[in-house]
Length: 174
Image (cartoon, rainbow, N blue to C red):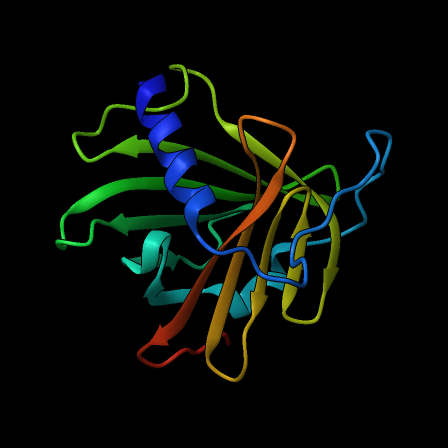
């Protein structure tokens, strides 16, 4: 499993980083701002675009169920198969938002340990954008979504991996 994570990280870091940084970081003692899932209604829907190495990628977000929005991400291979997927939970916790995710290989074996997951704490929420520690979800033009992830290479070099999506079909947030 760790081998796949290293391959994914190497692939991710081979993507050309954007000159202007899209992700944000905050000190360890940063207190997340008040936020709710209502501020994220723009994210609901299906999105398609490009991911690692320009290969197709898709992301979907369901409307909230209680205090959680469930999302999925699919990174395809250049040949059109599944490279890996993510299962995402955008959750209201203690008056703010937290994003949690788990990675899976094409055969559904997990990258993280059985009960492990990646957790991204909110830094700021704005109209049509949420900035989590090292991960950003924001509107990209009239009908687009930008997902940016800050990643550290084997050394101390930090790069951003960008995913650009367009909305598939109609969206009704009411």
